Amino acid sequence: MGEDDIPAVQQIERQSQMAPWSAQTYRREIRNRQSCRYVVARADTRPPNGSPSTTDYPLLVRMLQRIGLVSLLPTARPPIAGYGGIWLNERSGHITTIAVAPDHRRRGVGELLLNALIDGAYELNAEYLSLEVRVSNLAAQRLYLKYGFRPVGQRPHYYTDNQEDALVMWTDPITTTSFKERLRELRRQLYERLRQQADQPVADNPRSGPMVG
Ligand SMILES: CC(C)(COP(=O)(O)OP(=O)(O)OC[C@H]1O[C@@H](n2cnc3c(N)ncnc32)[C@H](O)[C@@H]1OP(=O)(O)O)[C@@H](O)C(=O)NCCC(=O)NCCS
View 1 (cartoon, rainbow, N blue to C red):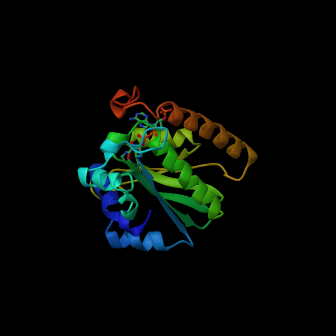
View 2: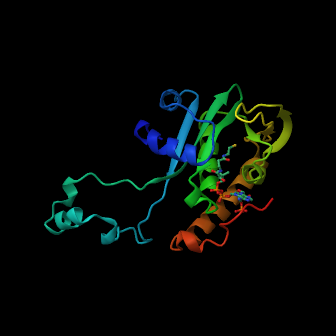
C-alpha cells in the first residue's frame, strides 16, 4: 500500500462496514516500516497472455497508441480489490485490518492478502499471529480458521459502533515446520485456484453468493 492508495482503500473500508480509519492513521501505519506492513491486491483485468485489450483504453489513448506516443503516458494501474495490514505487537504479528471489495469477494483475494500479511509477519520476525474479529463475522472467521487461527477468548463490547463482542484468535508458532508445511500446501491450492479462475469472468464464480454459516 502506498500513500496514494489511501482513498481507494477507504472506499473499500466504507463498503465493508469496517471501523473507519483516518487518512492520517493509514499514513502513520504505512510509514512505520519498523513494525508494520500494509498491502493492497490489484484486480488485473488484462487477459492471461498479459497484453492489455485495446478496449481497456479510452479512445484518446488508443489514438496515441497508433501514432506511437502511448509510452509517454503513465501506465494506469489496475484498481484495488482489497487491502490488509499487520502490526508487530511484541512477539505477535497482529492483523489490524483486512477487507476485499464486495465485487471481488469469494475469489481468493482475501486469502491472497492474508498470505501477504503472513509474509510480512515473517519479515518482522513475529512468532505468532493474532487478531480480533466480530463474533458475528463468520466469513472472516472461516478464513482465519483455514489458516490455523484458533479462538482463545472474547473481548466483551469491543466494537464501539454496536457494542459487539470480539473473538480473539491466535495461531500456533509460525516458525515451526508443521505451520510452514501447512502454509505451503494452502498456498499451492490457492495459486492453483487463482490460475484456474484467471480467465473466468467474475459473474461466473461458482463460490460467489451468500455466506454459508
Ligand atoms: C473476510 C473477507 C476479507 C474474505 O475475503 P474473500 O476474498 O471473500 O475470501 P476468499 O475468497 O479468499 O475466501 C477464503 C476463505 O474464507 C472463507 N470465506 C470467505 N467468505 C466466506 C463466506 N461468504 N462464507 C463462508 N466462508 C467464507 C472460506 O473459508 C474461504 O475458503 P474456501 O473458498 O476454501 O471456502 C471478506 O469477506 C471481507 O472483506 N469482508 C468484510 C470485511 C471484513 O469482515 N474483514 C475482516 C475483519 S476481522
